[in-house]
Length: 120
Image 1 (cartoon, rainbow, N blue to C red):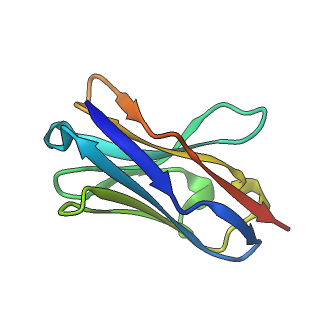
Image 2: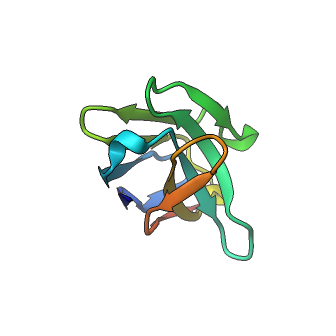
């Protein structure tokens, strides 16, 4: 089992920045990849960006956040980050981190979520 705890959300004005953190605990050696998802009211949860845990290589990022969001990780601290800059009102959502044990299984472990609200 892997436990994930996010932090760093909050209220920010448009154009501002936030950094989300996600600390993993438990069987972290079993993690293959991690990602950040978001879900806005009335919308489906979507994968924003993801990386391969072992080498920190980002393998996916959605177009609306390219150039504004950066995913990274600190392997020694078992922590995943999402640096968000130039935030827009449409970035308002609940943000979740998730972990996958392997490529086939998909994201199995989920954090509780952290709210990001961008005021325009």
